[in-house]
Length: 203
Image 1 (cartoon, rainbow, N blue to C red):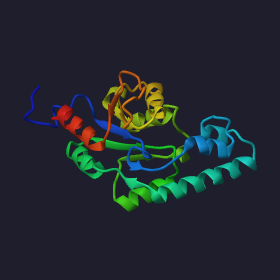
Image 2: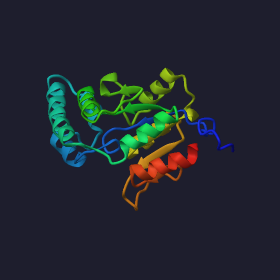
Image 3: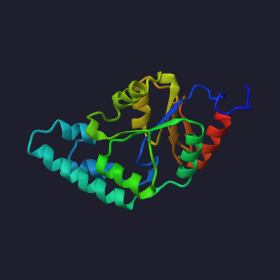
Image 4: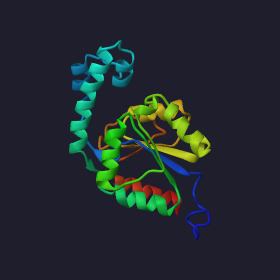
């Protein structure tokens, strides 16, 4: 491999699809408690609410939004994100954000921390994880093949969505050394560790 030009040694990666909560920002969500409060019966929250009849649907969505808004205002940018984003931009890699959170909360985080993405997809798109439809939409908009992108998230929702979209490069941020993610998934404890991996892979 010719390492004299980092932009031509890219191993097929043209873009990264990031999750938001737990990936870009540290944020506290007790999803077990939230599901109990919303009485989802253990079902994924958004799918559960979407299938409710009115006026219960609107009531539950407002309840979820209150929980999310409160958590978002307390969220903090993960250490090393800005440095990682600067590096990815230098390498001419596209960055997408795909999140099940709302556009309002995404706009709040982007403005507060002055970060940017080439493409943002929130739940208002009607596409949310663990379906891979949002990822496929990113690939279509960018005119990328599935092997041109990797997914960076923090949960099995991201893994399942990537699998549904047939994206094989999946990176999970987790400090749990006893994680049970599939073998093809790369797991890093910190953004700085992820940054070092990108430098090794792309240079």
